[in-house]
Length: 329
Image 1 (cartoon, rainbow, N blue to C red):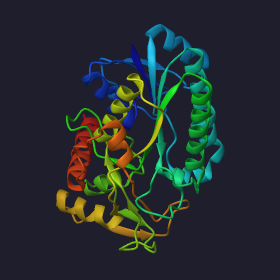
Image 2 (tube, rainbow, N blue to C red):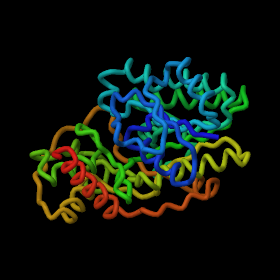
Image 3 (cartoon, rainbow, N blue to C red):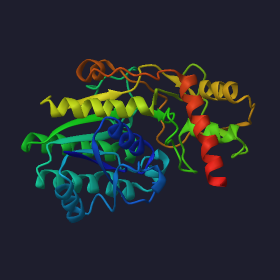
Image 4 (tube, rainbow, N blue to C red):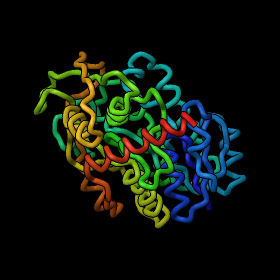
């Protein structure tokens, strides 16, 4: 048995590939390399370069490698970009995901783990957010993920396909062993941007909106460390292989930090009092998103190890420094 990891040359997918290999799994990475990195793929994994929407390629790969489970990470993820390019997001995140799901059915894959997002909740009426809150995404990114959730649920009901949908909150940090991290130079993840600014890669960092209804006016998010996140996926795979029911689970810690909290901790950890610029809100940004995370702990026995903002920021800063040296060599 082997696991197909789509987007396995990217940030979260490369962590998943490493975690699966650490657990003794056979891993096949499928990535079109449009945003991934060759060196981020573990050497023990098999890499297939191609598009997840290419059903002939996907189905041939599944059959050749004896794939019994798919962990689907490949996606476009930038909220403001989705507002500017909705068709691109619906094509990549929904249409191609639908093709991937059909390929799973056609090849008798039994287990599917889907990377969804807290953006499906939109502007939540409660925080922390429970999984049964009605979905009301406010941007094309969230809607593209919501539609894929629908497709997966309907397909699971019609075919012998078990699934776990994990709704991520804000993923941050890096592999504690230093093997991989957030590597896209123009990534919009707040903690990465703060790390780049602390290291002098950016002249300042922007805070987009200080008029939210939060404790300090800046956006509040639930930051989940990336290794903890992929361990939730490994737990989901174990659950499905053991005959567990299909599930939808939030993946977050249940606590929120504001943009200014992150900036303060980054300044403390780095020792750099970098410049901060206040800018208007971005389109599609909700005020606060924190997870009600009881279900994932109960159903998947998930026990996060890195639930500490300073730890997460230290990892991100160390990875950014390593990446700077790597690119300079």
